[in-house]
Image 1 (cartoon, one colour):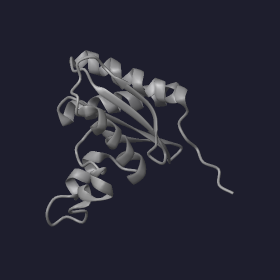
Image 2 (cartoon, rainbow, N blue to C red):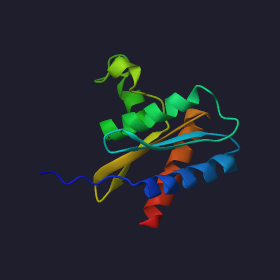
Image 3 (cartoon, rainbow, N blue to C red):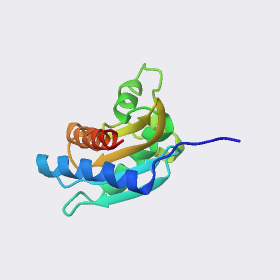
Length: 140
């Protein structure tokens, strides 16, 4: 029998609050998704004014970061022509994203979920995702 650590709904709310605060600070209304360790959506927030297409992108960033147990940004680097993961972004019906903004959440070295952010630049998305993770880890 397996014992699996995963984010709770309350944990997801903490992650979202940290990301939202940073999004407000940088002045970009974000779409914020939190997934469990298997990439399944736990919670989602759509800030007023965020990009329509960013709803699915944020969810897929969280899915990718949780499932791959790595940042979406690192997949972007590894998926360039000639690199080991070239073409990975076309796998699983295109759900694997290779743009910054998806970050796994690890507790005691174990990935328990992930956060995905979209609507800003890749750097802004990543900054907001990191702020969410930092808020969550500080709450432990």
